[in-house]
Image (cartoon, rainbow, N blue to C red; front, side, top):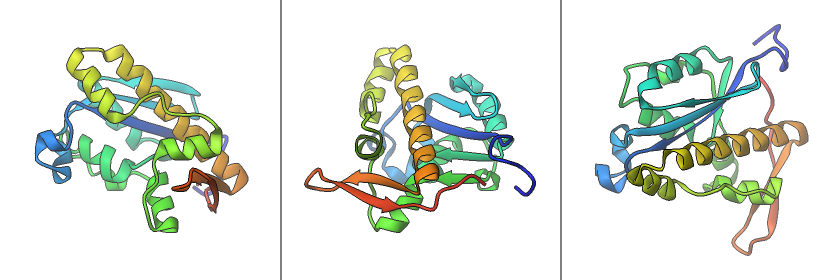
Length: 187
């Protein structure tokens, strides 16, 4: 993005929750069948969180496709795959930074968002995706909305920490923080 400063760019942080588990749809290869229960974005331009329900997916796709960059955690292989069940939009056309993909490439293994949040930010996710599935079945949509928004906050804060400090921490098997250098920046 030549000529744009980080302050003038519209970075959109994004997370979604699903209606069904991988097990319920025949495995992880069928993410497009998991269903969309709720999504949240945070725009750096507007400094505003936006909630999305299933019927709002066209507006969500529009927001993502018009961002200067979309940032998420496992967004390429999960969130976009779930949304692909609703649209024929080519998500590979969106400038995207996936924190999990970047860290997996550096570490050689996957590390969870909650692990990174605990080690780097001394904060935690408010629940997990399996709990969000239970809430969907119970019709507890407000709980899903709060949880999904918190995941966006954690993702945003972790990314910004990495951009500013050029490292993040994860907790190893002994629950000891391990520093990992990152070359995160703003496009």
